[in-house]
Length: 301
Length: 222
Image 1 (tube, rainbow over the protein chains, first blue to last red):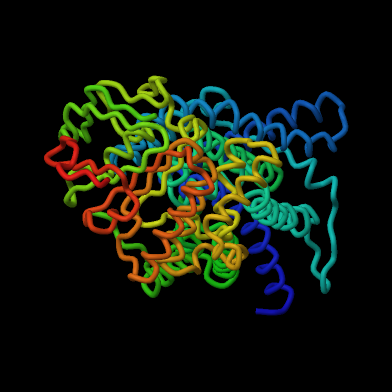
Image 2: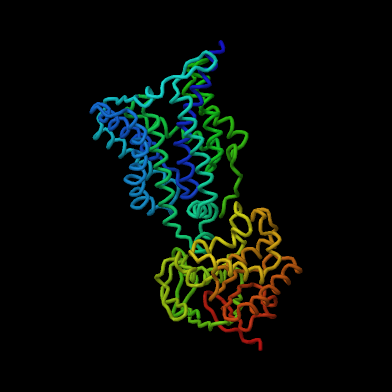
């Protein structure tokens, strides 16, 4: 393999890792607070992508500047968080916090299935492709290799800002402190007057919006079509499990590991591309069952 | 100050407390004694709103049975659960301050309350900036008491605070409760314990909980 191929593999890996991180970090944040593994997270990613691609396409077709694609991504993320995230938590998840994990998984899986069909109803089976945001930023040359600035600069920068922003938000703001407190000990949090219900809702909306933003950011780089949500949720699970459930920095490291592993396989052994993320997860979990950054916890009886 | 009226508490389908009828006056210090599993913790948790309650629970004459759990500490209730349960990612002082921030106390009140906590527990001042996850078990109990004092201006409920404390630390904890009485003579204090001897020195009234029912102890301390 020559140098430019290696560079390409690294760039692919980094840009893909950035997208996976955006989705996985929302998933792990929600798990940390609600203790629910939300399968429907994949649908929220897909709907973020559909909203951005379809509305963005219409906006550009109507002759408006393609630069509008960027604010549109934020709007799509907010819509996913508020219009989908809030009702899912309020009307559905709130009823099953005390139930068994199996039931919780089944319920979020049912939401995922319903939202998959909703996507087909609204957007049909035709792929959407709307890449004006990507083209707008052009290419950059690194060591003789050309790559899109959108994927090599914008995506990693957004992911990094999300990571730093989340850290500061959780550490410095009162809302963030409430989320941190509820994550660690729900009853201790309630006994000092924290409204756990409100914290659950805010966390879920924030996590859902991050999934939506991940989809919005991914849309210029790929065809948006049925099934992208399923692919992303499975990969995000792998990232979250590798990192250790509820670990934000861990999700960044695991996303990078899995992103790079996946793209290395794409160039070296394409037939293993689908398998490699799970092999990485398996290898990590064999050595550290609690994940890279997880702490082993004794199960309470 | 605190009153149970025909209060029943179930956890799932299991009755834990039956027909409680207890009145605790303002500024009383009450020991709630009972064996493990007798229902001491459940009694305190039911005041916090963490259990299903039939009958009534009143604070200062106000029926709080249906009040949301998150609003109760704002009434002036401080609760230190068993096992400390501090927020390990925050510093000791952040743990103590957090209830005041949650209750949106104004900055002056927050500062005054923090000052009160340090007067009752001067040793916390030295460890204020340490992560709460890094303090010892006994120190953690002091921090948990400090956190409960932040909002607990009317009612302070301490669940087995002496459990697992070395004798020297237990003595310091007892002294801190003595200082609390000087700093804040009005507050009602309920302390649970399985070993009644530990509470003799400062509790004026002892309630015994047995098979889900609460009764006055036969020998009242003078």
